Image (tube, rainbow, N blue to C red; front, side):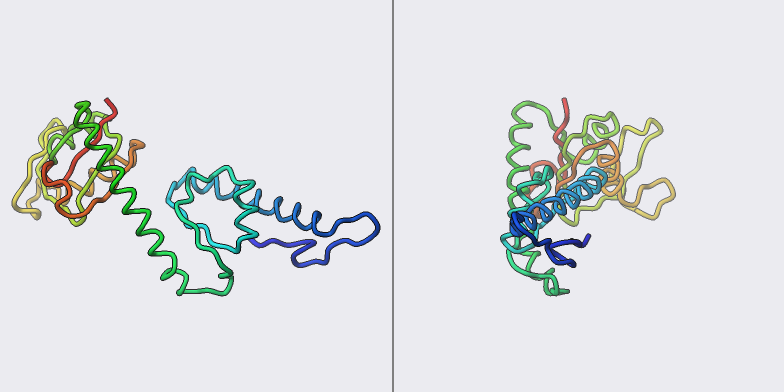
Length: 207
């Protein structure tokens, strides 16, 4: 979206009693309300973390009118209208910091869930809980994959040695991730060996 009209692509109105700066500021607020409303629709359909980029003045206007602050995980200050691939290099460290904080937080949530007995460890127990609709947050170690065999009930999953066998799901972890997201849960990837006590995968359950 591009800010157009007076104060952008057109000159500000003149005349006695007109405060150009106030008029310009209000037009910019209106523009950022439109941006935020459109962003809100996108975030509702696909709630991904967002890094906000802009000069201090525009960041202040956006933050003043935005009702979607929960999606903003980091801010990069500066004029980057003409920044292309370099922007990814600048933004990625901010996103990495966010992901590290998220991993630390979800591991703490898992510890609390264990104390409250609202968790499932290991692929088999996690699979059953997810199929029953009890999956709130799925924690998965990075690069963890597992072929598995499913019984006739669809609830009991056991690891399999041969991922090419006709009755084997070649990657049950991938299927689990998709199911959790479809049922309104969230998925967080953690570092390798962070879930050793849970056989590389764990679920925080709704009840």
